[in-house]
Length: 371
Image (cartoon, rainbow, N blue to C red; front, side, top):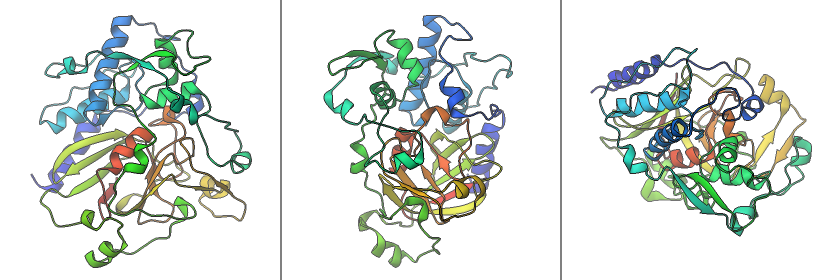
C-alpha cells in the first residue's frame, strides 16, 4: 500500500468523527459520572471494558471514564482500521453514550475490568502543594499532584470523578494501605520516564526554548545521540507520526501500517499547531517550561516570564518530544481531562501515560505530519 493511500485511509477512517465543542478543561473536570445522565452499573462496566481494551492495545481513548464517549468511538475506529476492518459510523451528536458494535473484539482479555489496588507510600510521595499562579509555581522545586486522588487517577489512566464513582466516600483522605477499585490497565509509573531509551535525549534550560535546527546528516545524528544503537537507519518499517487536527487523534505508523493511536489536544486559532511536515529532534525528560503569557496567548515573546520546574503537573507534563520547529513539541499535560477538548498553545498535548508510550515509538528523525 502506498504512503499516499495510507494517509488517505487514515483521514477517511476518522472523517465520521466530529469534534466536541471546544471548552475549557475546568468545565470538563466538573462533569461527574451520572450527574446529567444516569446509566446502569452494567453500562458503565461495558464502556470501561472497551476503553481498557483499547488502552491496552495502544489505541488510547484518553482518560477512562466508563462512558462510550467520542474518543472511545474514534480510538475504536482506528483500531478496526489497523486490522483492515470497516469502522462503524458514530451515533448523532444528540445521542451520546451509545454503545458501538464490539463484535470480534477480545474483550474477555480485559477481565476483570476493575481490580483492587492497595495505595503505597510511594504513591503519596509525589503529592504536594500546587498553587494556581505561575508566579508561585516558579518558586517550587517540582510541580506535583495536588492530592492523592489526582495521583491514583493518573496512575490508572482514569478520570478523577470516575475514580470517585468507583470508590464512593473513600477518596477524600487516601492513606497508604487504602484499598481502591481501579481500571485494570498497566499502571503509569513516574519512574518509567527515567527508563525511556530515546534515540536522542536533550537537556535544555526549557523544553520550549530549543531553537530551530536544519536536517542533519546520518553521521551528525549519530554523534548527537546518547544511544548510537538507536539512531535512524533505512528500514522498510520506518516509523512515522500523523496528527489529524480535525479529529484530535495522533496515529503512529510503521511503514504504511497503523500500529498505535492516541487522543491529543491541538492549538487554538490564536496559536495554531504548525501545519506541515516536521521531524523529531530529541526528547527531554522532566522538562522545565518557560511560561511567557504573551507568547502563549499571542505568539509574541516578552521579557516577562516564569521558569516553571518539572513534575507531573507541569504544563508540559513529564516529557517533551521536540520537533524541528522552535517552541513546538509533542508533550504531556497537567490536566488529562483537557485532552481532545480545550486548545493548546500550538503544541500537541497528550496524557502523560500516552506521551511516554509515544516516546518509546519515535526517535531522532522520525517524520511527524500535522494536517
